[in-house]
Amino acid sequence: MTSENYSDLFSKHFSFWEHLSSAEKNFFLENTVSTHYQKGTCVHSGNADCIGILLVTHGQLRTYLLSEEGRDVTIFRLFPGNVCVLSASCMLDSITFDVFIDAEEDTDVLLMNSSAFHEMAEKNIYVKCFTYQIATERFSDVMWAMEQILFMGIDKRLAIFLWDECSKNHTDKISLTHEQIAKYMGTAREVVSRMLKYFAGEGIVELYRGGVKVVDKEKLRNIIPTEK
Image (cartoon, rainbow, N blue to C red; front, side, top):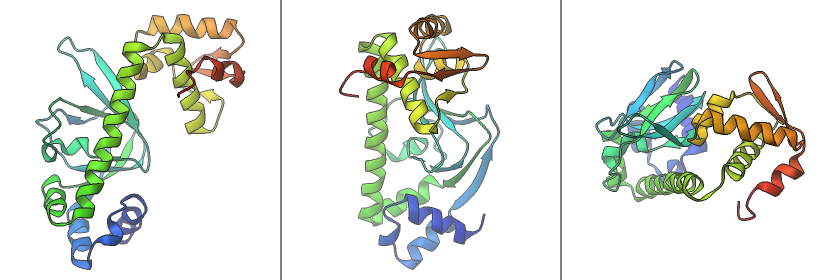
């Protein structure tokens, strides 16, 4: 990918881009590399790891918390066009917990050096505002995930997950196993399997090997809390 391609992507996904001088844009480009992660690769491993700002161009990343016992809880996933600043946690003093990021698929990203980005944020208010805007959005995702785990029944959580997957991929078919769904929801596979079997019995979904098909969106929507 060329610097011109980088510039086009940054203009589209970084709101501060139009407020940069030519010299600042060149500095940004000079400190950005295109990186490929194979499926299963650990991209970021806690606060000790500060690789930089990520812009996903292809594939999918999963961001999660990890307990001392080794149990992980997915807090959000990143898709093409998504930006992640938690991978540069050394820039944000407010981040006091370890965040881990894995490649769920073969994934390509544009990666900007954290020190260079921090230097730009200190000099340009638009870059700084963008950084905290993205961090705030991600913290909102974290709080939403925790709210579901702590306060919602598994039926509502599963309904929200299925609805969001259908909306995001523009299809009624969700090509994820019960184990994958459980991982993304932060629960046990057996719990997901039981609830999917119940949904199937109610005519909401059909189950097939390696996936789920939503057959009655109205019934599924009625399970979701009205504020979602």
